[in-house]
Image (cartoon, rainbow, N blue to C red; front, side, top):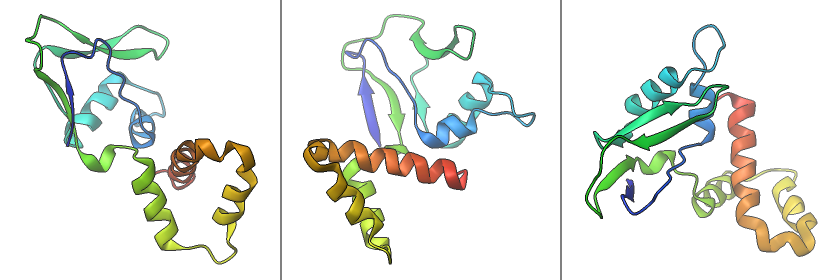
Length: 132
């Protein structure tokens, strides 16, 4: 589990599965649907943390009361965390016959310092493509 503590003033929760799970049965995005998905996926929020709908699909989380410093506010299962090293290991272990991934990394050239971001973007792309 990933844990956020109360010394974080703003917490943003966003990942590919969450983004796709925000759609209700009619294809509309809904904070209630996202909230239900989060709970069903094992995300645990402190009772003082609640979803806030700012309109125009601008959602966030807010504290409704003071909490002690160091209090756990949100627990996110490891399986929902986009960790570039885990994603890289997962993708590389599967292998690709045409060596596409290696070609992409080589093509990054001087931007290889941002390779971590490449793996996360690739994972988001694959999730979107498969509708995971």
